[in-house]
Length: 116
Image 1: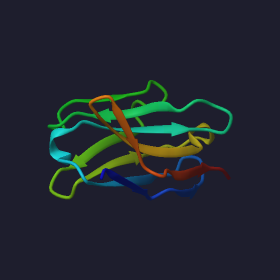
Image 2: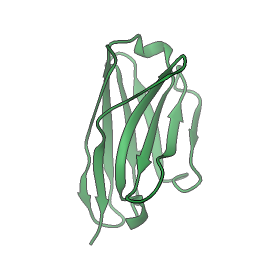
Image 3: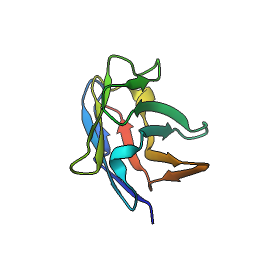
């Protein structure tokens, strides 16, 4: 079955950096686009970044453009989210996502807290 396991979250000061990882299994990773979402308390889950199969096409939410970078390593079945210049408003639970047909699959999430 599909499994997505996120890691790398934590507490960081404003202006700091974190790198999230999502290890995928149970499906042919290299032929699926992958995404990162986040959900802050009291808010809806929102798309943060997405990456196509070949790693040559990426897209970002306006709020993170120029600060976050999504990448993938198909040999390791892993997708990453490098987050720089973090702001308090980036505080949220971050989720890895893959869509296969009509089904969305999610990891358990990893908490990112940006605070001084």
